[in-house]
Image (cartoon, rainbow, N blue to C red; front, top):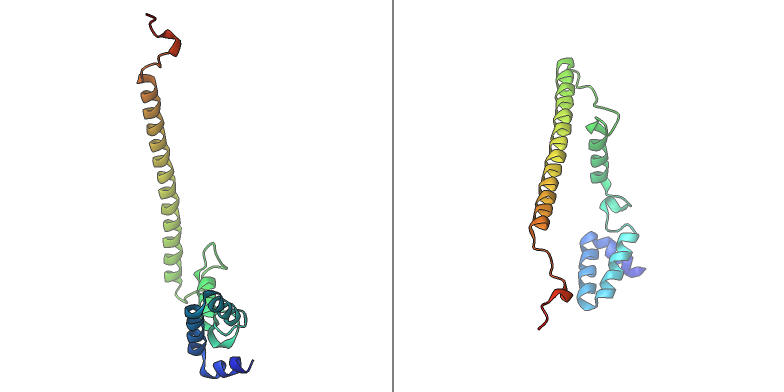
Length: 137
């Protein structure tokens, strides 16, 4: 554990260097060092489990995204803008729904065309000649 404390004093670059050296020496050793450094929280931001401020910022951005994912948008303070934003999002969701239905119809038409081609090829192929119908000499 004395080595771990010494590496902690140098920071995360020391742990990364040790991991790389471990992989260069013998890959299971590098893998063990990587597992230890991740498991102990040494590879995450601010020395604690989780992604630190990036995790918090991402979670806040996700919460404020709103719509069907969260509690909705927070008011910007401008009522006209809020109404415009809601109308635009409603229109975009409707366009997305229409586009998905268009893609479904397109896929269905393609599948039908491929199936019709298969059936036409199958009808037009020559009938197999039975082996017992060979002329006898």
